[in-house]
Image: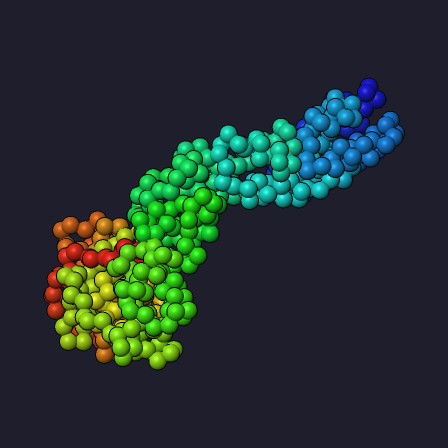
Length: 474
């Protein structure tokens, strides 16, 4: 319409106001516009508001009702500047932003900040739709347009730019699929299984999940209700696959307790047979469950509940692994530094440790403290063996890297712990840790200097034996 202010306001604005309106429409900040004109940021704001009032007053005279029409056009999640200019018959793209702001519209807010070039009456509505899009993840890359339509995102939105932003809740996986940034590994596994259409061994999921160990894959999938583990082969499937037979019990121990509760005392062979019908796992795993503090042995040698008078099962001492040594009140453990250690996950070790510490039933634990404000190290006994937690702070303090070796020295008379760098001096993956490593023969435990035998650091196991079969099940 010819009566609209043209050429950035035409005779409505002076030269300085036109420069400010044009610069702001081009995406310049008030500081940048002020630097070009020799004005302060506050003065630019004042002049911009003055120009906005003049443009709106002129529009009120020549086009009655334009504000209502602009607000109706911006009533959805977001509309582009071109949509408003077409609806209102505007030609001047530089002044249109000021007119829309005068009508009460704002740029939509997103996780990438304000979306310039788009306007809405409700600036928070678009962010809500983008979050609904993120909640629909994971989905294949070629499904993005369809999902965007389903959540109501407007056509023409710079979606790829928004999703690629560092603050986006979604991320593009190496195979071109959209996954949640904070659950990218599990989402990638979900899409992989969905495409494969069959249960997979955890080794098959290492690459799509960008995981470093099979244990990490198992731990991640175990914590997600979308996945189910098929026993006894240990394959992983999607819980939504109704054609597969899944155990109604979360663990073998749950199944064993349910059978004993319902049937009463049973011979071990008969108990194992019934449990495997409900929750098929290996015999080795079933024997592990017998160390639970809920199960025991009757005077007739039957398996029953401890709550019904059964005596807890006392296992014989396992063979001590080369990775552990005990001399007097000192117990040393030699551990390789893995991603689990560095990220603070539970580290599974040989069950001899739990037996030697008196943790004969499961669950049970023993805490070892350290001087200062450091968190304690906890040795936990589960039905599948022994576990360590609390090593991450020690690894960070020693500045070790993946591939290094640490020596964990437990003092049994006062339950204190000292962690030392255990790599040979000439072959350490972390030079900073090597230069800062304390003398292994004089480790201070809880502020008490003790002479740790060389075996406690150099002979504490050259091979860390880890019993990992069905560890996620326990």
